[in-house]
Image (cartoon, rainbow, N blue to C red; front, side):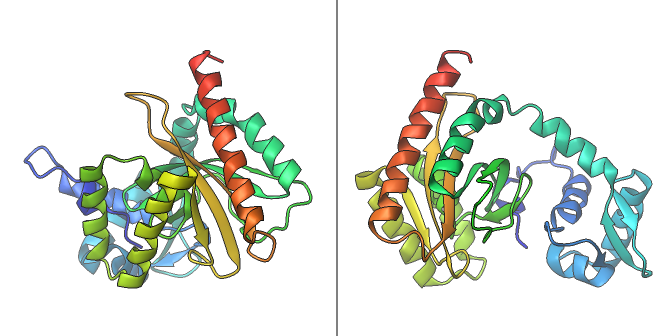
Length: 262
């Protein structure tokens, strides 16, 4: 799992490499990972095993990791949860957006997400699903998905300045992504200028389609995106385009609500 540390890391003496490596260990845990072995952590972070051992010991002492049932296994502990909920509590925008997101989820029988970018991934900071939704995604707040293959990630790319976007695309190209994948990204960015939304059809995961729109709220506010999706068999052709247009309207409603100081 590449979190894009190389993209965001400052290149000067103020950058504390040891701290960055410790955070990289925490970030290598995915939503499905209850326990990870020492060797797997080293593989995912590309850190030497001896470094992983020292970092894991330190993070365990701080309450961010806990020992697993097998020697050499670790899982995330409550220290990380506390940090995460402290951060999510600051996303007042998620509270404002939730009624609009839930209304679309219930009406269209889809799952709707509010995301922010972290490196080469998007992170769910808000999520709504219909009570009868076709549960094909199984995601919730805190989930991390790839930037390049998801509709929400592409929406964030579409909202970037060209130089910033090019830097990310170049970084991603070094991580083994195929030329075909990036051709698809560029096509969707071109389509965004016509449609106002981005798409991902069977690209992040086979059988799943989604649309996304950027949510840019002004200078100094984290750039976000809204997305909604469900089974590809449901979202075909006109249905996908219609959902994209509705998401554009929702983004406009959320922007107006934020500007009113809701």
